[in-house]
View 1 (cartoon, helix red, strand yellow):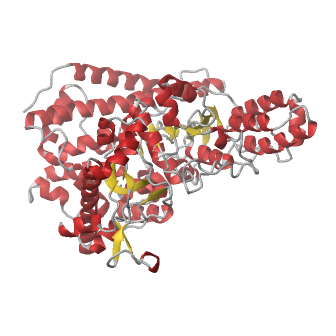
View 2 (cartoon, one colour):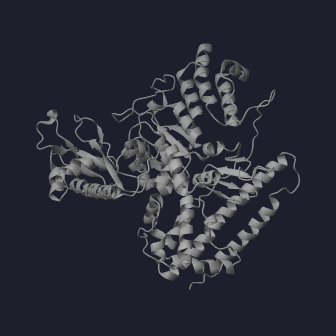
View 3 (cartoon, helix red, strand yellow):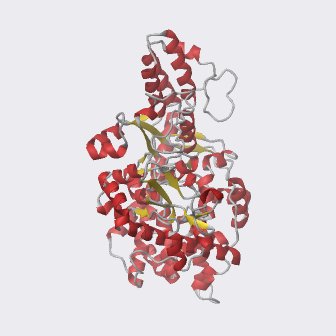
Length: 640
């Protein structure tokens, strides 16, 4: 992840823009008056939390991401904006110095070591010494293909097996320590030889990869029930941070987007067997309490998340002490926390849909899916919002014929309801709680001492009461960032392809490619650099583009210039791919804009403005452009 990506993941664009613009929620987006032409009488400025972007549909007709907003607002250049937002987000910027380059090479070597460790442990799983481990995995229901897919292995029952193997291959003990393969000897391990010894011994090995599939560390499960701890992970290293990783995410990425849902379970084998059964949208926090960093990781792929808890975790046998801690983990030495208030805060901050489902008593997800995959599907379909889950859990634990028990349940649930940011959901939850307790809803209002939450931004006028308005939801914005990146991937390979691209666009009555086609500021800057490279004649275009790039853009350009998975295209293939990708990007953006303009027009009509309004002409222009895009995509592509 580049520094720019890290900054975007940490900064909430709604909060940032709200420092300047008074925003009002409109469906899943936010609207307000554009700060860049203050005389506007129409709230045509829209912030899209899903894509982390903004756009003005009024006079300036501009848009972009958090970087573009700050640059336009403050009049700063990109380096100034990068420094400001990095400080605001708590991201440390490191220049591409020789030291940093050496560090990057060191990290690459450690990743290579970990990849070799995967092969080392996987090989030992197939040996007679690994027979017990292999038999255990097969007994749990894993197929050979699944074992290979997840790279499962076995750590030999020796103090120096890995140490001896990798030092003979040229790795130093210090590198093995950095990778977490060995650990330092202490007085408690006098039987070990040398200064370090194997960290993992007589354990089933689970490779843990980052979201991009790069090796980061290992999880390890005991075979001997007398060994401790039952699960042992790699230590914190430069590559492995357990609180910021999710097991299985590298293999779940495609399914998360396709199904628009993430299922969060506890154990490694739960993830593996659910993937094996076709439920590839499953990940695990590896036995620890879910962190906000992990939620933010998932948010890049989907905002719909289901947390699968066993029956004990759901509260049938656990004690709900203030709903802060509900249980000990089923299978792990670390404590896995079910914090209802915490989940609601995550849901509000991330604008996610978090649900909770419970398993049959005494069963884990892997056991359920092995017994009947359809049963697991039904369990997920029955997942409930966090508040409803807590209501039902408490209802089962109390005698609701007892007035004092009703009061206890109400006192536990009402604060949760007040933490829900959406007023319509809060009303629905109060009504459900009243029915559950068989009391009048007005009694709950009296019981709730806190004043009702007001979600409107800004103070109310004297005597004015907040009146929530129910509006139709807007479909989530479709992201064009991958299309933007692919356009740049092609142009960085062949900058000269921009000229025939522009000619093809003009022939189809479409505008030339420009920085305005890109929403991400780093993409805009690289696109401008390509254009500038073709307008000068002192340097080769490739040299000009890469010369004196800021570190953040240099990282991006290196990533885009990495070998393409399906091989490098020919010149004709590249030009055809470039033309079609630009057309698809514009289709995505115009479709989003038309939908938002319809919504803004409806808002005006709700406010009593029955005229065609200021957006009609813009919608007509967008519709005409969309028709030209569709015709261009359907026609032949001319290459030069």
